[in-house]
Length: 386
Image 1 (cartoon, rainbow, N blue to C red):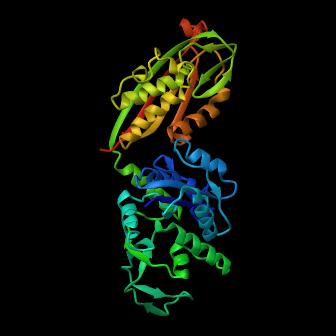
Image 2 (image 1 turned 60 degrees about the vertical axis):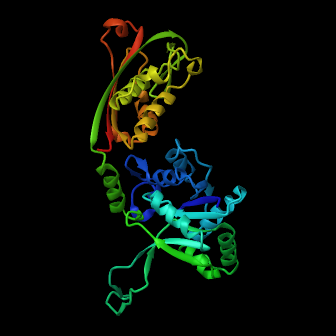
Image 3 (image 1 turned 180 degrees about the horizontal axis):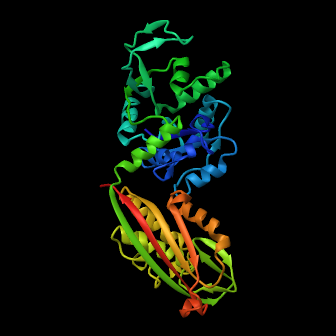
């Protein structure tokens, strides 16, 4: 099998509330969509992942997946069914034999669940995860009970739903030509043309984010097991040299001098990188990026910070918060604080409410007071699985 995946992320997610669609709201320090895509990208059987987004969501998507190696998204249609068809067509160049179609708002899909769906495709044209209905069902269209529904043989289906690629593409096209546009999942599209679709065991954890309560509970779930709390501290100092700008927290600030260093000499990012490395018991920044190595000449310090954050993620953890103090007479930093917080939020994968940046002077004392350089201090909390 050569398997691809379509992730449907085109909805407005308005029922969840908030300023952003639910797939872009944050759980565990990351957008819901990031967790969904990461699970599929990390699975060894999946060769290509295609995201389908809504109109005007390009910026949200770019910010959500900035550190993922993911193909550009395509814009979906007016209905979920149309968005799925568009996503399937976008995968045509990959020569797939099978495809998984998954809702962006189900971020807790496990490798085992994906494996079960793929296994079902070995003997069927489609395989859909589901949970047998356990509750008694009542029909009450008018608000009062009309009758009890026999629940035997009833399943609540989930995604990812897997299909033979050519078969599901043909089914979507046939449904479109027949005027069907409101089929609510791809199993219904397959049913319309008579494909053989198996039910495989779903997962209670593979729940769909629908309301704000769902988002809050998902955030608690992701944080619940990160009980090993670490702290780290970093300090860095750079002198001024001839130049026209300084870099602080990844933001360019025009100035009559630059900070001297082998990289871009972002003193704040260097201190923050060392703080994170210290929290997980690693060496300092020079251990990973020695100044003697010419490849780091004038390199952006965001590379260094990204490495430290990735080491945390490899341990199953995340950065909890960051507190940075910058000691400088010049340049004036306060006008740039909002941009600096936004920059760090993207790099650390945490909300701006978990980042503090403070700027102060040395009251003309010492080398900072003489305007010879800048010092930065950083403290972080890192959360790892207990």
